[in-house]
Length: 495
Ligand code: UN1
Image (tube, rainbow, N blue to C red; front, side):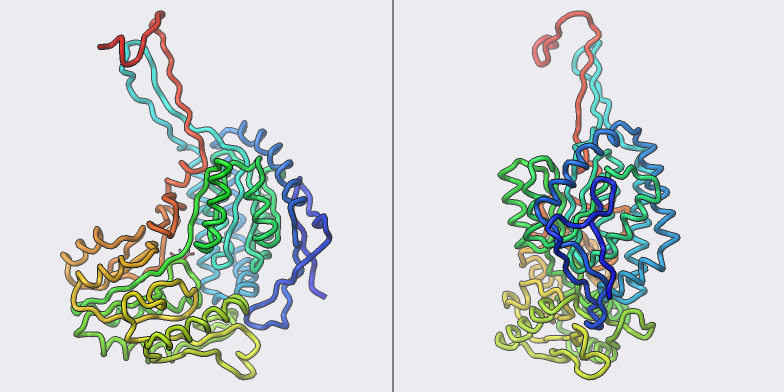
């Protein structure tokens, strides 16, 4: 019988009020039940908010460098448990173990960055326009932050939000994806072992429509950070807009790798395999379009298809596996739907296009690495996020056309250009409309200490990672001190 897990609310591991649970299963082997997790509702969320509101007061009064020291210990704790967490992650999420270790490492990097930020939560001191008057800004915590996170980076993404929120002095409530609740549980355990005061973190499992929604709608949660689909993001945004909440959204992508005639094709091949089929294409940053310049199109397409056919699908815990399963049945249905759509649009299926059968792979949500050629700008396969191992190949005349195709989608997270020409690299750097551009590297590979996020409908202008997220999780306060001894009227008395 699989273990039953609980929420963490008000300093205790507790059962959900309604007493309902959902099963978390291994996507590589359905019969492997990882555990049963709480199906929480608005009552559980309300309890978590009450506790977090208490926690926020004491935590805000703790000096930021000391808050940072807790995060340092969290980094140490995650380092110690790196292998254990990575294995748990692969079991519940399916990504290959090397990638799961990378996911944990990203959380470790984020923890150490946050720890150092505790001694550097800069404000500004600027000259006043009046004599004998002091002007400065500093940061204050906001209060309780609601964090809603996806399955694809079960540890890294929660920590991108949680660690900066904590260092800035907020209490947090995490509602992790229902497909990856175990990793989130292990994260909270590390936080508690590291000396984080219990009321400062709450973990509420459950579904987006119930637990997630209750968190977004709760009046005492003034800041929400959400990573997920553009459709759900719009719903979250509507509620936050109505309730005047601060909101950070990270959503879809339709990222392209461009390969020019002068590129190192072997390098570009490694890049596209990693970008398109790593994490089984389930990254916001995944390469889902491959834009090839005319002269190398046929040759490079052949190279990609041959290599894709040699990728071995399997359980992510098996060292021989290159590509794990999709996360669940709905994900595989969606990928199958897009394969049909692409065929109906007249795209040419070059390889893949279906789920493998048989003893080894037939009882997981696997899907073959898939390549469609003859894709034209504007087709649905070219415009819409599939979130699976499906690559759309588009042929273009030159860099200008490649840039135009890259930009002509509603998303703008990451982009990549392979070229040996410095001028092309620099032109693309500014012309590609994405939050991140890689030159001679794939569309994935963001580092924890640089801002992560996209333009257009990928986000709403905020960034995670790096220094900008600290602005998001803190309130700027400005103080003027007039020590002249008389009334000085700004904009008037100095003229
Ligand atoms: C995501 O795609 O959802 O750049 C996050 C990367 C990772 C983070 C990706 N470091 O692919």
